[in-house]
Image (cartoon, rainbow, N blue to C red; front, side):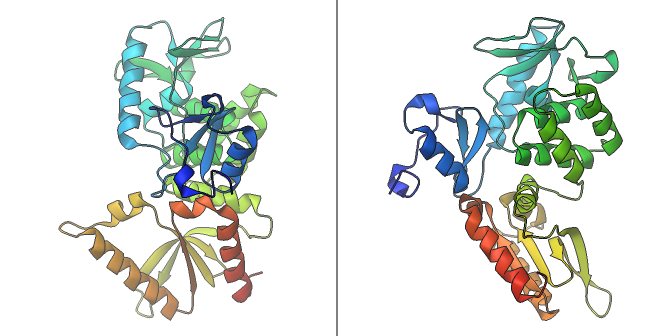
Length: 316
């Protein structure tokens, strides 16, 4: 039994919420095993973020504090352009397990890192690439999303591009920026994610789900946000994932329940309504597969559940 099998041996993240190989709590193999089992998300080389029981790989309060830090540092550095995850925080882009230890800037020349900032070489940056938000000069939304995608994993890239499309960035804009990067580091991840990015994928958990499904070769690509109506034309549900009108998949994140809560409703009221909604879908002859953030801890178990449902319904 290793540390990821024994709940009493969970690793303690640093105050910034990250686990680092240099902390000495685990070796490389244990960390890789944690990623495979869905208990950790790799942020960058040697740095990981835990997926907690509620599936929260990021703390909204920490995001807000980070954005405030970025603005404060940027206002002391007027000749620099805020970029990457720092620009994403100001734009309000939803990211999957972002590394927010440093404030990122583009500079004309001489990229480097300090204890507080990461300066990126930005000699090819154009004036049209920048905008001003809250008095801070930063990269525009499209370039920001592409920069984050280039620095992340495939799942992180899919998540940020999905949200950028929902916020109104066009696929053409993203494609043009990708062409400008040439064969730079991370471009393959950006291009691959851009091929599958979809504005109809709503919360980060749905983007992560899709990224996993794309990696699972036997799982067909589902339709997103399909609507089901009863015999009177009344909407029963708009589902996250749909396979041939036979199987629907639903990712249940905390954000979704908060979003669906009506004035005066308790959390249990929302759960009860969701149960009724699921019953109506089953009455229509559909197979319903649900998963939550905690299921990402054991992605192969989730994979088997989806595959079994698709097989039994005759989809595969």
